[in-house]
Image 1 (tube, one colour):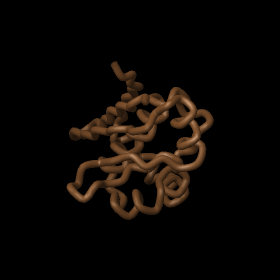
Image 2 (tube, rainbow, N blue to C red):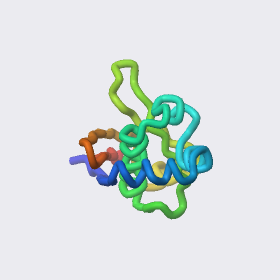
Image 3 (cartoon, helix red, strand yellow):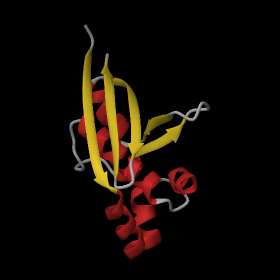
Length: 123
């Protein structure tokens, strides 16, 4: 049997919208990669889903928000449109250290909330 590592996060979309309104580009560039910023185009539901995914990945890696930078976890898209996770810097190092060789992500949002679920495969 193969081990897994799981992370989940739920966030209020209005919270991301308020932060974006208050801090604008400074917030975007601190949390999101250029690719994520381009994809989301300032849309709060998409930004919130990616924020939740970043937190869920950090939980699956066992670090929470300490030790891994926001931009070291990136939500990308496969050719099919399915979301995917790309790790950079310390996030890759942490994944290797604990034996995670693949992360799967699922994103969803309603009118008020965004949620992300991440499963990491431990080799």
